[in-house]
Image (cartoon, rainbow, N blue to C red; front, side, top):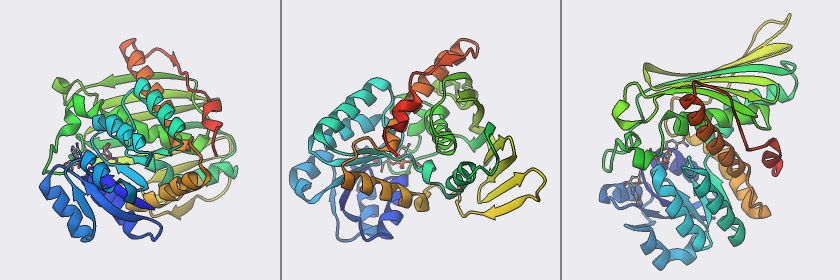
Length: 348
Ligand SMILES: NC(=O)c1ccc[n+]([C@@H]2O[C@H](COP(=O)([O-])OP(=O)(O)OC[C@H]3O[C@@H](n4cnc5c(N)ncnc54)[C@H](O)[C@@H]3O)[C@@H](O)[C@H]2O)c1
């Protein structure tokens, strides 16, 4: 499959490109970026690709040589560029968040379906090895019936983009579309969905903008999801000084704890098992997570599955984020969620 990347920034260079380079079923043929230094960075990795300043130039000149458009742009630019790619009948891989609200989401899902193109959001935490392993342990019944999970994702400020464009675009509400919920919140919800399947019924949330009050973007969020008889508690913070993510799941028969590359399985009356699963949450590119994701994308293209699982999940995430804001503005009261498990069972 021939791929063109639109937006050659941090995640394109450190996440997507190393994964593409390691595969023989993907051929990167073109890159679009308005910044000369970013096009030069792309040419340093692949000397024989075409580079363009605008997406329209690429589509005008080189469209026949592309099967998949890979959108790695800042969040608010996704929707228009995805539309342009679908209008050219291309399959689309799009970085997360796919879009910023449910209206944009519904519109893109409809266009992709009409065009019979695969629209695949990069929900790469679903493919993080330690998360996949924990899902396997839960599905094998190792901890009995899961009852409770607590995820703590603590970061240091909002992540910067490449220095040659607008490194602080995540602090600009018009470009970012949201704060920590749309960034790490999306990942945490995707992890919960991978571990437990189905979907939550309601949410209670508290969000705050502590270090960035002028931006009106939340940098602290604590929310609880009532998820088919389980309670999932998620704490997200970017106000700290040491980045750290941990995931803990308790069931009727035992417990799983994930700390970066270490998975601990503790089953009643048995010694604790330590399983080393190389995952590297602290690597900003997570390039080894993209292989499972690309395999799934290529499979969807092959089987003409226009409802890839992460596309359904993107709708769930937008509903949760919208209701988290309502809940937080209403003292943390429970808000019902509209996205049902049924819609998440459309695809395997
Ligand atoms: N899945 C993950 O783990 C993960 C990690 C980091 C970032 N992301 C997502 O990837 C996206 C990009 O983030 P980033 O950190 O790489 O940003 P970045 O700022 O490093 O890169 C953005 C790039 O887009 C280019 N650009 C700007 N306007 C453009 C246009 N109109 N056409 C073409 N190129 C244009 C910029 O020159 C820059 O090179 C965001 O949506 C972000 O949420 C995902």
